Image: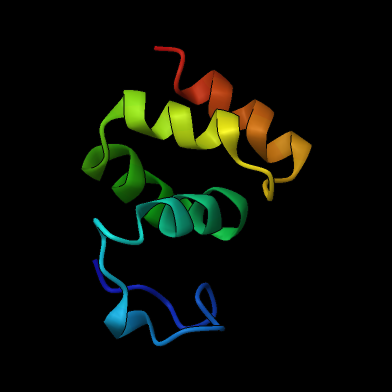
Amino acid sequence: MKFRQTLFWDVNPAKIDVHKNAQYIIERVADLGNDKEARWVLDFYDRRFLRNIILKSRCLRPRTKKLWTLLLKR
């Protein structure tokens, strides 16, 4: 996936490793991503792993956390 510079304004998106930086990617896409990026995260990462990241995250907004928790219940 090619990440938008506006989503990852603080780093070079081309240098993001999808495995090593998984938590960073998931949190940023969950809070600020568009539909295409959210779909990619849901398809690329294991749902149990996603749920764990979302539930333990300290930087997600409360509404974002609720939405993603509901999305990952299935």
